[in-house]
Image 1 (cartoon, chains in turn blue, green):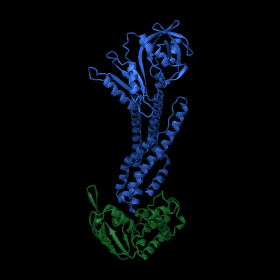
Image 2 (tube, chains in turn blue, cyan; image 1 turned 60 degrees about the horizontal axis):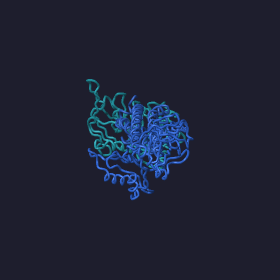
Image 3 (tube, one colour; image 1 turned 90 degrees about the vertical axis):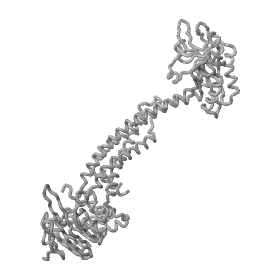
Image 4 (spheres, one colour; image 1 turned 135 degrees about the vertical axis):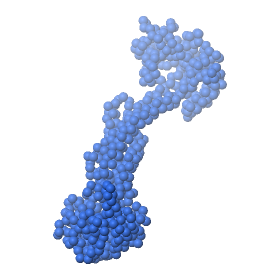
Length: 397
Length: 223
């Protein structure tokens, strides 16, 4: 075994240019595989980080039925107090309104909620404060703007204490939220937060039923466990609609992460598949050159057989040569991939993206190269092993 | 030890059948020194290839050390070539990429000899042919006579009972030829069976027994 390895190295070394050209196919294939998959993985990681930055481990529950025995915020909070698996809840009602500041007028989204919303969503303030429990108790006419609303409606961020009107009712700006990447990701709509009770008064036509709420589990309880308790409660609370579907939907960040990762894993499988094709093409190059090598060395094969080489030893010699050729290509390819990824990292520096050489894909490439060496080496090696000693000895002279 | 009965080898060239060996009978006893002499095309190389297990006969029985060779598997034949037969070819047939000692070592590798034992045996074999000082040289750096001596060292490194020499002096000048023949004679004196194939009467005469071959038929000659 070690002997055929030495022989393989010597044979590869004896014709360096040809060996390198033969390996080139494998090298390019490995680079394609490793670099593409690593790039996708880097992008995936950055998407997942952005998803994680959307908030901590909260869930959002949408309620479709807000007219037929609507769920009130009092009922929700009473339930949450008695439910061990849910720590805090924040009811919301969403509607749209025309916001005016001086002569400016903009269409905004209005969300009526409670102070708990701030912690559950993991928001940050740029100026002022968020809604407080006392605001909700007193139906206060105060509002909190997100950064987009501040830019669009007021025109500047430092606007705490200014008054805006929503559909004609005046609200004092109590705070402005900090800018958040994830907001841009989800549409970048101007949103104005007002106390839940003020929301009910503002839109008298509403039934008082909440159309959505946020909930987080206490420490040590997973979101998915909490989601189960929410589902159990709501399935009892709301009848199914006429088609037998639930009248609510529980959305967790897990689900978002899952769907993001399923998209990226499809992407990396697709690119990996394309790269694998180039590896196979490289393998055909190996087979081609091995066939040439076997023909060139027919006489050597004859000599080896005359002095006692068995089929098996000839087979393993040429197979080893093909595998070593492939694995050398693989090592060079992985090294060049590493260089390319470092280069890519220095290009995208500061964009929040990093591309690491993925150990999994390196292993995959190595296994793939090994298999290609075996598969495409087998035919030429077998051809060599099957030669009759007399024919091989007298070949070409 | 070598016993050929009714060995026939036919080559079909177009419509014509050519008998390279035509019902050949030959018995070679252990430790004999036999020359097979004949002009080119007489079938002497075919005879050597069959004795050396490089080729198989179309008809007849070849018994080596009491065992008919058609009872051997291909792997077993490789083993017999490795252990019982040493080849010396006209054109040396050294592997160009390997140094002298590596060429000599090769049969031992195929025999599965452990590395330490190998280097000892290689050293001894090269000593025997007087080439110890050239062990690290590549074949292209050696003269024809030296290359043939490496080939002889390779042939005897596994301590075979038979040395088959096919025109071993064919590519060498008369002085070098004499050296090679001396080595072969010495090997015979040490108990090896030597079969020498040649078209040169002077060379053939150095053997104790001479067999003449013409158009695939054998006849004993005593010069």
